[in-house]
Image 1: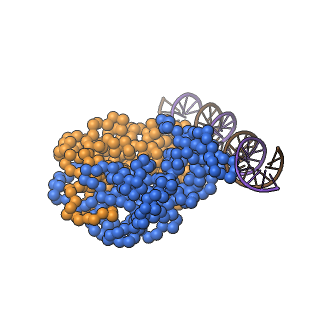
Image 2: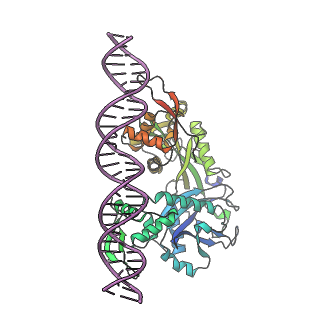
Amino acid sequence: MSQSYDPGAFPPLAVTVDLVLMTVQNGHLAVLLQRRSEAPHKDEWALPGGFVGIDESLDDAAQRILADKAGLKDAWLEQLYSFGDPGRDPRMRIVTIAYFALLPAAELSAPLAARSDLMLAPLDTLPPLAFDHRTIIDHAATRLRGKLDYAPVAFALLPPRFTLRALQDVHEAILGISLNKPAFRRRMIDTGWIEGTGEKESGGAFRPAELYRVKPRAS
Amino acid sequence: MSQSYDPGAFPPLAVTVDLVLMTVQNGHLAVLLQRRSEAPHKDEWALPGGFVGIDESLDDAAQRILADKAGLKDAWLEQLYSFGDPGRDPRMRIVTIAYFALLPAAELSAPLAARSDLMLAPLDTLPPLAFDHRTIIDHAATRLRGKLDYAPVAFALLPPRFTLRALQDVHEAILGISLNKPAFRRRMIDTGWIEGTGEKESGGAFRPAELYRVKPRAS
DNA sequence: CTACTTATATGCATTTGACATATATCTAGT
DNA sequence: ACTAGATATATGTCAAATGCATATAAGTAG
């Protein structure tokens, strides 16, 4: 920022936002992909994304892309990492700010049914991806595993009311290991992030579990 | 990335890299600042930074700025976060990728002595800063505190051989609290990150402590 | 009313970490 | 050479956290 500048002197360069939208499907992490309709990488799978408007903040651009693909407004969303290697896009120099969103699988069924260019791909069987999008997804998965224990992120993958069993399933899907049930239950309650509602789940064949919800923000 | 594109159609927009270079000085975290020589914010303090070359990767740009200010090549360096609010720079739309570097204070004394536009400011008494650089520094401090317990970052602030006492001083400076000595010592040794060298520190007035070094990478 | 399955609670051994205390080793001074 | 002083290093104890096994509770299905 200490160099001289001249707007007209800047060679063509674009900034985009790419979105890693993850959910848990059938006990496995899955990511939303979009089939590209144009070159380069036409017909290959890629992360949804778009150019950042000249008067649009990065967060707003990510929000817009999320709303465009998932019709959502209040999902968990945070900036992930930026990728800008000179050769990552053959058209021109493109720097992308990757964002990371989490959503319960149920909220994705509508857009998935409505749009044939979208698909939900399990992380362990990803198709070949355009650009460096595979790297971006790997970053997201690592971030998610790292945050799981000290931040209330798993709840973003669950409906507002959930059982402790469902919460454990989400944790096990993210970590890829099975957890001890009584220990997990105690640990979750001790975090102070959740509280029981007194209500029970319905429809089960056996003893119904209590439904919990996220506390209204302690601090 | 699914929209149509035309390089000439993109309004002027620039990508910069800003560098948060931290060190521990007198038991306190400090950050390297540079006095701006040009408008906007002329003569105010700011993070060192610069435009990303059109054929330069983001990491390379950060490396270049680090070498330019500190004359260094092998410091700990990682990408921090990206900031791109439309109004953050009055000249034009500028998206900055902030990078985070750590260096032992001793390695900064030469550049600080040689260049009068550079200064090392303790985090708790920062001067007013240009742009959104105060926010960027706050992000860096939070990141550092969060990584301290599960990643070997503190060693980047120490010389190759260090005593456990010096390591504890670094941790205490970062966390802002004092730690229990025997517990800290066991915890550090149990991480497997360090090993004793058999050598003792010299020059002290009392019993010399053993010098440790970082292990050559376990995994 | 009983069998079955899952939720929830409890007991216990092991581990982890904080804290207090003891021992070791150096320099400086007499 | 010896002692005092200061710091490094090691150990012991206690409390909290964690993993695992087991017991009890609460529903459905027959």
